[in-house]
Image (tube, rainbow, N blue to C red; front, side, top):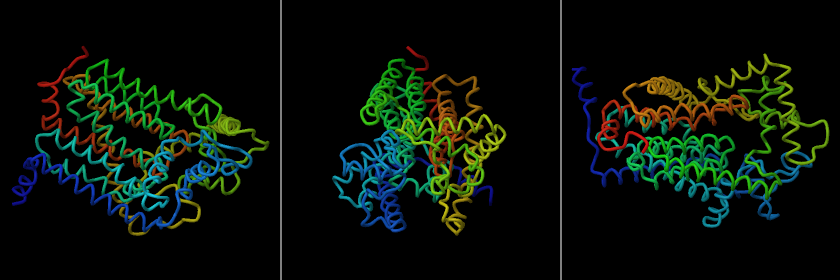
Length: 451
């Protein structure tokens, strides 16, 4: 009897008609958006709060733009120092644009943000499901898995953290790279779309330029077209040049770097790091006055250089401590299942919801390492073309490029959440390959070499 049940559950089931599937996905997205926005709004008491009060430095920046008309925050993050190149402009610009339409209320802005950003999930799900001839129970479970991670859901509906925007864009980017028929058929329009998504990441998070360039090159490999690689790369390079020009205008330096790089590096590498990290946020050191210079700082670039030199001096003089901290950061990034990075006034966070989160994180870590092992195996598959191997190649490359900055600086649970959907999508692609759908299409219908 049990054998018959298992055989029934494993039996392939065809997708609904495409028009029905589109409606199912759209309704699911609407439900997810409305429920998630309502829960987070009530939990965080967003109603009636202005955008100028959002955290992570973005509220102060929006307030400064409103009152001074300049992209500059003075005397807030460090006494006597003004900052302009500390936060990238995409996030505050997006929120201020939504404010023009929805009004200056975090609840309405948060709902509008969720409606727009969650469309990326709809596009990704459609690409995955429509690219396979039939779904399986494993595929359905994998696509639903991120929704079962409470902290992933919370991060997606945030409005003031980069990961809230990084997750949906990365999801659509990976889905297009790995599942789009038009890209593999050599469509230059799809390659430009990938370039645009990669370019938006450049204007969102300072650690993304390397991955943005890599994603553009992967688009060329997947489509077997040097032209597509050049087009996508041109878009990303254009975004980098535009960002450098923006920083030159507002901060006086032609650079894509952050003026908080040294400050971030020092908080992750100083004598107090081990005492605080990983259970509490390293912002605790700011509150305790531990991140202060012993001389006046001229501007944000002097601030950056000063704390960068302090961090480098500490690393050189305490190599053992640096190695210990690096191993702790690697554990947090690749293995930890408990909450990390709590604010100093929140010591007991292990209620029922967080037990669920930790339980689901155990499952995610298992899925993550299965995906990594399969990706390494896929790199050496002798019967796969370069276009096919570009999928595991891009998955592993993203992990390396994204993780590297956090292993040198610091990582919390929030920083791990952007890994969830790429991992899920890669396993969906691998299962699709095992069922013959994707590889058969590539072998029969699509180019296998660069022209």
